[in-house]
Image 1 (tube, rainbow, N blue to C red):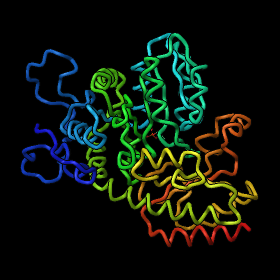
Image 2 (image 1 turned 90 degrees about the vertical axis):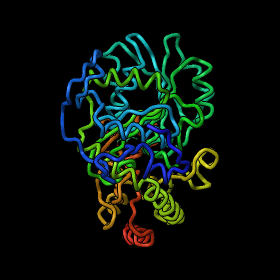
Image 3 (image 1 turned 135 degrees about the vertical axis):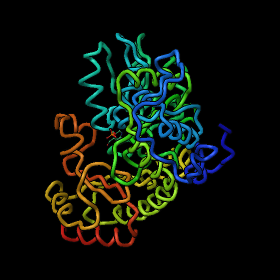
Length: 388
Ligand code: PLP
């Protein structure tokens, strides 16, 4: 397979990793809806051509495209974002090992780290992603991993990612970042030396709210090892879902740029509205992570969260009043989605802990879709005017 001559992410999204020559002359990648392939004398279990072993043509084209998108050495698709996260963590840690992770990650990740890891003889200390000076106190002799989100869910903090890389190197830790919110269009972790980038491809990479998928992208030695574990754990992506994800990725750059622009306009509007007490969006000058985001990212993303002067009743009334954003969990698709994290992804975190982390009961998270930005602003304005 020739190495990609494509330089921009827009062109890579369309052309990188595509089979050469095209299979049967097909311009679009065909779906290989076959679970098994002719035995050709392979002598290694992992080299057998079988769908769960993540090596069908639909898997391989995605692996090539995803690694090109982030300028990384290797990539692996998984059956969901959580399959990518859990496989990466379980694959790098050994029984008895310890890791550090941001204290306010995606709720599913937090549940896995807090509730499941101890059952495997592994442990996690939560750290403040915005305070690198506090990280050394969490280190132990058996620490092996440090885990961040490049834009945190749901507070949209941007951790000091350069300090994160330096800290990982200084203490011999594998650095992992969930890059779902930024997407490869806005941030490519390998470019600043992060070992592994993890994605819920359910979100921006696919972009159409119609499948679950994940990805592990990064250092080849780690991804190769994780592929063997994924082959055993079985969190493989079905070829038909591979095809849909592949198709979705082709429009990634277009969608994310539009979402960056619209989200910037919406965040500006919300910040000035009397009913809103705070807007969390890395593109706002008022955001603590704004300087870092401006330095490291090519765009500020399509995700924001905001809170209400009049608390939960106002948030509820607002959610009843919006007509374009759909009230649903998940994010990153063409439809705008809106939700209260305290009653969804953070529902299992005790209320006092939730509040300490800054996830108030009235916090609302908005995933901006590709609808017209003026339509979205007017819809939000009408819903907000009903709350004051
Ligand atoms: N990471 C982030 C930041 C998420 O928001 C989510 C899901 O919402 C996940 C990971 C998990 O992804 P999936 O639902 O594809 O397993």
